[in-house]
Image 1: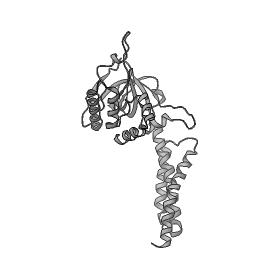
Image 2: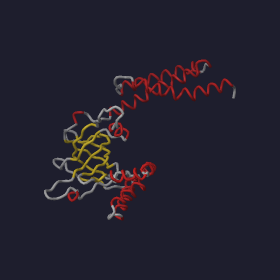
Image 3: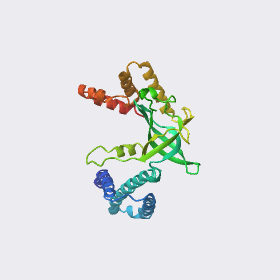
Image 4: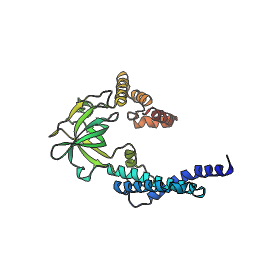
Length: 287
């Protein structure tokens, strides 16, 4: 390899990552993200410019500069596109705080507590105001609270029809968009929810005009891997029913499901120096 080619390769290896970071940083200086339509227009214009400027990029003194400029533009537009798409996926404000009926699939291993079951729900259809079911692909995080009975604990009032991963359900729900506290250098719960594809949270309402019903049992054809993980977790919990703490740890190590590990147990793991081992093992086991 000649010295000139080695120089160009070195410039590209160092310049391309820096150019990408420059494009992302340039987007973050905008006061607000562009709408999807405007971003699509810029994508089209950049592709058009790339086609007509290719002969210019073949010149020796313009090739590297053109490649780095293309990386900056690509980073700027791709980041803006992803942000615009995620903003567009949020639920309309008109649907917040009101009862709506949705159909879809349980898309996570349910987390059971003393008062509710929490799970992700992939919506396929929503019932409109005129009673028609319309396509409405969204991922929600829902809670199904157990009914309260005077003199009985929450756990004893858990619904008989347990939520199984991969099952198709119809729910009346009440939703709100994902919000978070804007504390500098603090934990951003909205960013975590968005990274998982969750754009709204809510809870299942009591059955009224819209009944609560399971439309289809879990199968290997829809969310098959999730369904099998749920079956394995159920068998672990059944085999270790007398030792719930051990069952939660085994499920975490085998399936990567940390939801059952309590805060005191995490404190014990940190004090004994094994918290990072449990955490890493769980991350490796997650699909």
